[in-house]
Image (cartoon, one colour):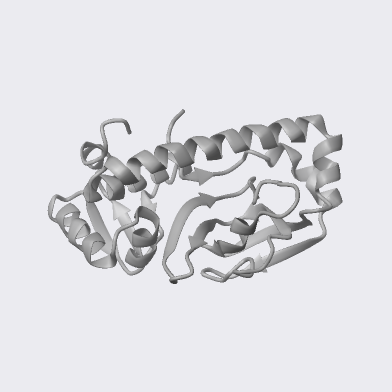
Length: 220
């Protein structure tokens, strides 16, 4: 299965159904928190428009962004009971964002009484497990340059962004790839000099997708 950082459309077939069972509609501005860090994960969000990120926040304050979610995705995926780790997981609006909101506990009956939705949830979990396994190998064995280029290349392939725009600051990139900001800046400088990217305020343009592919890990 191809490494995937950006998830979208896995639940778009259920949008009309979600309209009927939603608890609320909410809108968030870019960079606005979607859920409260340290609080129980009592809500689920179906994305109508925009993109949000999912990040683990360590008690030290360090952040590791794990994935991004776009239109047609439901996050977090449904889970029964309480998982303490989920109190450390935070969703943030990457762009202006509009979502349907569901109560997670109440969502159980929809999963259990709708076999098609249940199977979609199962398949979405398989994708996340695959991502976590492959991302662990990426963190352990890839160089800093490979981690950055893997992220850029796969993100753009997953999103089909024809502008080839990476809409993140250097700090956000550092939080995703697990490097400090100084090392991210160093690798971005090399990519600029190689005419692979152009850097602009809070985003990056990849100007040569074929060339950036050569900087990626061999398995990408």
